[in-house]
Amino acid sequence: MFGAEQRLSIGEFDVMEMSMKRMLFVIALFFFCTGYAAASGGDERGVQMISVTDCAGEVVVIEGYPERIVSLSPSITELLFAIGAGNLIVAVSDQSDYPEEALRIPTVGGFTTISIEKVVAANPDLVVATPSNGEEVLSRLRASGLTVLVINPETIDEIIETISLLGTVTGNDRAAHELNAELIRRIEKVTEQLASSTHAPTVAHIVWHDPIWVSGSGTFQDEVIRTAGGVNVFADMHEWQIVSLEEFVAAGPEFILVSSGTGMGKAGYDAIYSYITTEPRFQRLDAVKKNRVILVDADLISRGGPRIVLAIEDVANRIHPVAAESPDTGVSSAEPASGLMLMPLIAVVFLFALGLKRD
Image 1 (cartoon, rainbow, N blue to C red):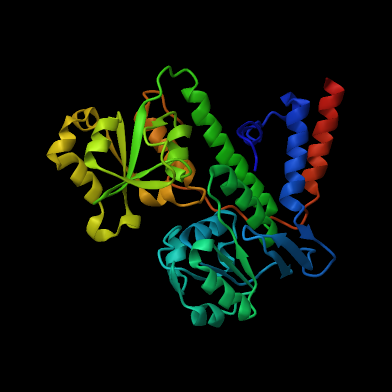
Image 2: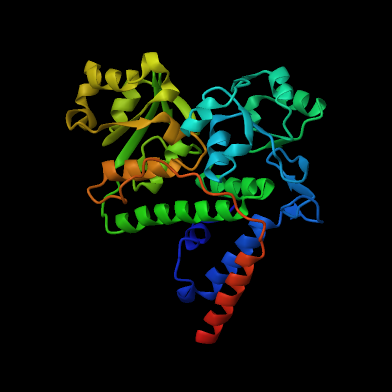
């Protein structure tokens, strides 16, 4: 996994001012993004076979770039659209509601209730899944002769790596690289604008209220809070844990983030917010008294996709008087990359040589 210093260094656009260490990292990242593919002629983009090792430790061999992809989670659907591979998706899991085009794609069942028959009927040459789909489902798909790639980004760094991986297996390396550079630039912008802040406010994220589930360390929500310049008051807990109302009040967060949006279901769209702001025992909290209970779209702060940066920007803007650049409405889908995969390397090496000469 990339360290934070390395990851942020990609956001430097003035290549001539990069240090030797950062320049070498750019070159290394290029090889990481393109080095998965074993090219030996074949289809129109020059790749006959792609071999990758997925997060399940399986060596996945793909015969040429896929033309029919089934996505088995909403975050995978978002990732594929974001790198310009949305036109390759022939079926998705339920709740794949972003971007809007995804709503027009046939579904193959719920996230944990995938219909094997519907996936097979879609005739995909690649199925992109997550461990949460269930080992039985994944085994049955493989037994049906389908090529299954399992991804499971659990941190922002891993989202960036997954974007690179999907760019490689779909032939959209350049688009994936450009998307990553933009995401890193925006995260770096948040960090820069918060550099002068002398106070890191305490924050809690509530996933559900009956009982009270909070986000601890090892979650996207915790990483969003930290990257946005806050301190998670429940960071000593791992992943998601139940706390009593008394424990929550005793923690006394300055800000409370509550999930809202499509991920909560229409009937309970703002149920958590309503509970926190009306429950008498919560009225003792400054966060409630000072109107610091913040609605955050569950799809932004919980999905392992490029819109996680929107959550960072939003939270940073809300918990700090100095904030990140204004959030966009979403991450635009990039154009598919061409087959000229050596051109970026030639440009990087050329700029690197000029930088050495300049030094």
